[in-house]
Image 1 (tube, helix red, strand yellow):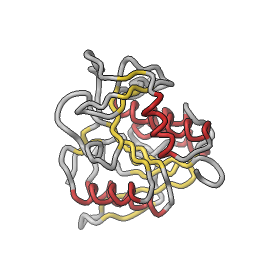
Image 2: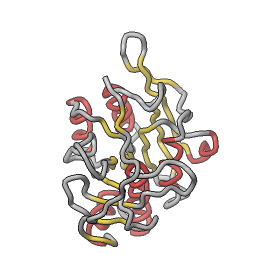
Image 3: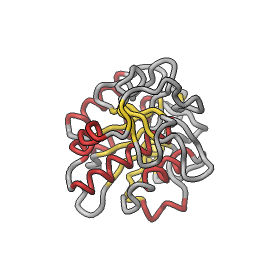
Image 4: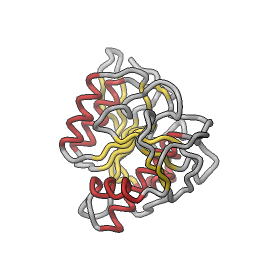
Length: 236
């Protein structure tokens, strides 16, 4: 756990002004004209996606502090380079729990490798996966915990699915009138990991193992959530 308050990373579209008191550190990861990634101080959300995922996480553990990596700046589109750089930064910040409510439609070696490195360093990575359709990344990597929306789950619940789409399911609804589906489910599950770790005075990996044993629902739903799923982001 973080020395002061629980620290949670979010790789998304940033967060808005209303959540600044919960931000430990934030950076923007953008591409220059030569398609090289550069870091900026701009991590403010223009699209409400990252803000809603942060709100869902904080609903489980309001005292948590957030490390925010903004990888969406031109609509909900990003690149493998930006996501890779953002996760490398999370490693630098010694963040041990990272939420990625995003889904690339192609396997990219750079992201696969940095996820593997992060996991080897004891970092728990959580990513959203659609309830149906083709695999998305990074959720499909073995080093990442995949979460999809499960309409059976209330906000404080999770399901242990072990399905081809995701290992876990979680609540699909946000606390506000915002996004819904796998993106929010991954955020809720990230919050549940953090809350479980604090309650048990343990680390995030042990908390994840505990949720595997104590999931409120076990097994896949025959009628899964059919609403909006993980955002499939454009990439280069």
